[in-house]
Length: 309
Image 1 (cartoon, rainbow, N blue to C red):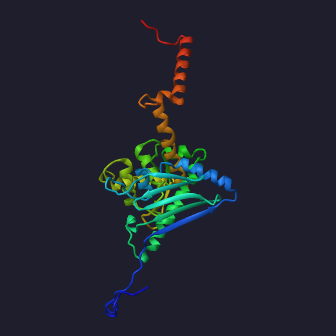
Image 2: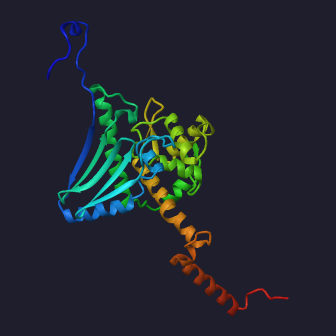
Image 3: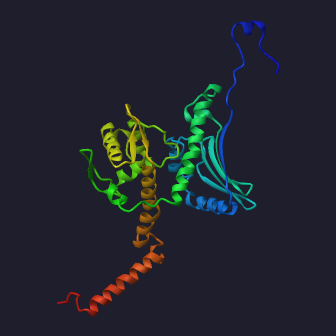
């Protein structure tokens, strides 16, 4: 490579400096039963088709999306021949997942601009980029795994949603469906959640999830919520520090609760009420109406209906 610097330039300290133009971090998992792996990946695509929505992208890449954020946010499912590919993008970076050579699940995080994550381009920043890329792959696979099997043992649901006393401390309940609780559990499902996080990180995530200004979710509220999560065993505090990490129980409970609300409760309620344009034609709505008519007929036959005067 020709050297453009003169002897005087070199004497003044001018030298080449390597920079990172693109960094890719991948994980390949080979299946001993390729057909079963293919079926698994196709099911994962159906389960995670909404990952490209702006609110989802902000969770994956731990960045807030605003109207000024450049780029087009979407989930793309590409089919070349019979090979589906899942793409999730944020600014100039992306996560891609596909089934490689009909026998391996390939998960790749590609960072095309280190500034997307507040990191410089110099080569000495590569370890920080490695941590971001490989942690994104790990979290994506972890959440996808739990999305296939996130059932809880008997009694865990009641234990989480009720208050109890642990080590002399009363643990406030985590009520299923409560907006603040559901937002709190959603933070535990983030793909780019730090392995160790603090009160300030929780405040940064909770405000947009709850749809409130950042100043309304105060450090005191975050401390209260961290205490709730810790006493229920969903997070643990690292010794001699103010840092926390999510426990295996925490990610399982959070995934199940968030999935129940987004996949069952909200769609189900929209089908039961006429506020949804398609509600009257939904199978659930028709079944409920049939049940109502059957109950009315039963009450009339039993002569329990109120008499009209």
